[in-house]
Amino acid sequence: MPLSDHQNAQSQASAAACLQLARATLSHEADELQAIASQLDHAFSDAVSRIVQCKGRVVVTGMGKSGHVGGKIASTFCSTGTPAFFVHPHDMSHGDLGMLGEDDIVLALSNSGESQEVLALVAPLKDLGTYIIAITADNASSLAKAADTHLSAQVSKEACPLGLAPTASSTVALALGDALALCVLDQRDFTAEQWAELHGDPLVNRGQQPIQVAPVQPHFAIQRQLQAIKLLILDVDGVMTDGGLTLGDDGQEYKTFHAHDGLGMKLLKASGVELAIITGRTSEVVKKRALSTGVAHFYQGAEDKLLAFQALIAASGLRPEQCAFMGDDVVDLPAMLQCGIAFAVPNAADLVLAHAHYVTRKKGGHGAVREVCELIMRAQGQFDQQMAPFLIQSKLSN
Image 1 (cartoon, rainbow, N blue to C red):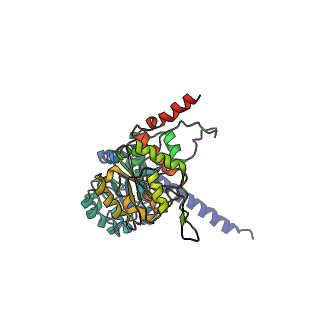
Image 2 (tube, rainbow, N blue to C red):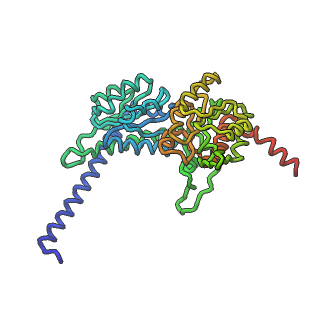
Image 3 (cartoon, rainbow, N blue to C red):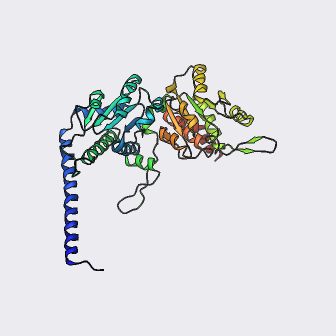
């Protein structure tokens, strides 16, 4: 049924009002961004410097809309080479604080700066020695005063015509997060090739033709930690195997290991890095695999892997930051997060993937352990030396 002239007029007026409000919203938010850009000072550069020097991870937190903004900021950091993840304040105050240490940085977002869930984290974070960077819209707020570094997201007013919905303030907070990530990217000399490595896709030029990307070492963000590793700790099911369990009628358990992993483990040991296995199951075949690959420390039936890790540290005389743990399920997390580096396989549980410093390209049981062994050898300048005998033999055979 066609609209009447009156209805047409109303529709046109409504469309015009809609466009007017949309343009006003975008213009106002653009103005607020310009104002924040002009006010940036040493606090921002200090925050960038802290993140660049961070030996751990950037842990982002926030409630409500700030939480949604924080999730995107964490994702941007990860995409640009900075290990980061988002943790909800509620989860952090109910045990997930155990993931953090003095080498980590917390980026806390709160529009008002008075979010009780976020403020409740300040005291325990300071007890841990964790550096706190806050982004708030109130420079005099409790969170702004408590943080080690405060970045202002203060706006003159929200774009919302009611003055209620976080709009301009959330846009400014998100843009500040982008600015932090990009400044860190710049100071770390992060390249387009490294971006391609992280995203698993070839770079595409303007003509949509794949660019030939030179081989790069995908461990640039954890180079210092890799150089310090003296012990690689491995879970078995899902890491050294694909996670499948085959049980015979006689109760015998069968597992499939990858030959590439075995050689990688031997080469890593030859390069001066010891090996350990901590597994929750008990299996004779795993024991045989450990013996054949030069594993020095072997813990079976370890239901509490953190307890086994602590015993391993005491026995080896190493510090936690000299250890790397490679796992795939949440039972591995307590020990993984105590180590200098936490490795995960791509088929790991989502929570493990969120907290890993590095996720392998190859799946568990399909060469993932070999990938990690080679990462460590390359970082420690041992890879060429370990490969040299095979190249020499190849030349002699020709």
